[in-house]
Length: 240
Image (cartoon, rainbow, N blue to C red):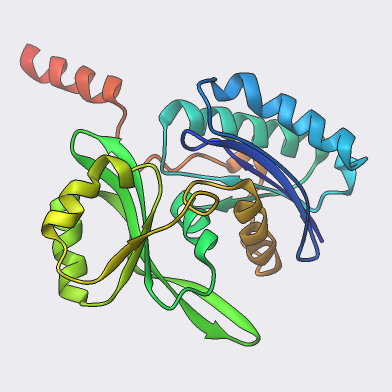
């Protein structure tokens, strides 16, 4: 089984190929360039580096959201284009599940935080439960946009040690320290941002479970309306 993973849901852009549980190649960048400048060149370099025939792919796994509206659209368009051109299915991997997969096997609760602006984060709470020779990712709190105060209250209520990761951590770390009463940690560099390799690895699992969609049917999961949509609705409401 060979899966291409793509992630442009946040500040990081990445592409990776996993085959039968082995990471063959991964390209990733977390710098001040738009994903439209980076994602396709990464894919081309990855293809050339490992002599990848795209027709040998079983599926394309895409970080399906939540995340940056522009980033999600770029990743979605890239995955849909590949799926349509190659006749391959897509595997939609929720962005926060892909982030949590960085900390595979953790005995602590795993809480990804993506900065959603306006005092909110995209977040979920996950745990790894033993399953056969490995672990299965399960959600304790499903992904959603949420205020940090509300999230910390929920974590305090659960009462378990937790580890945070994601670009929302440095933004809200002071508030987390102030409000959280349970022991907590923050993931180190190399395990605290989106990775296309994690999207591909989860994509491999979900593909085997039959969790695929056609390229034509794929849509990003934004979880909330864009700022432009909110402003348009506010303007329309004021005009009435």
